[in-house]
Length: 278
Image 1 (cartoon, rainbow, N blue to C red):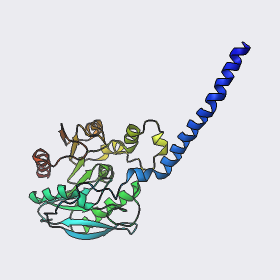
Image 2 (tube, one colour):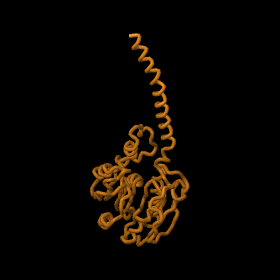
Image 3 (tube, rainbow, N blue to C red):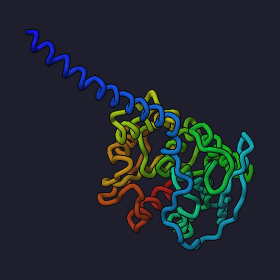
């Protein structure tokens, strides 16, 4: 008995410090994640699809938010009295130039569009936060309304992170339609998927809980998602579709990753949805 006790005591003395090291490392990871989490979520300096040539005419403008931040924005007015206007809310990485490969296709549609750069992106002042991005999007809606464009003629288009903003501002409104490209259910769910070893709900500052809000969206909705999305799992887009109110439509691609390809099938789905709006 004495021998076994001594043996167990040696094991405790050996593994105890190792356990303390792991606990210390874990808490260091927790604290670092909490402090720097927005650096993990927002990537204004990342460049995807850089170098595309803009083939649609835009007017570069500055839109002022409620808290007096000016947002670089591009506006294309084909005919605001005749056609719907897309408000394009981009994802968590890159600049307006990174969306040229998408908005170039809008020139072939009967639509106007406004695409805004978030605070902290495209050399805009400020730092991105959930509440800040909501203010940015609402400022863009107010700018369009100041140009005589009614809510019922505005289509809210959210891309990736922008889908969380789109769902927020579309609640209990009368927008012509809502388009969600590669949407997530919530940033909590997305965080749990990427960091299952962390208490994400407790740590997260910007939660973007779209799954709790989408029932408040009564505008016609189109949800697009690639089934091999490696960043936002496809099941989240499917869940958002299931939670959405009618009238609702989907374009689920077998082979698209997170950055969906603007091919003929996707463009046809967009046109069919847009042209079918009242």
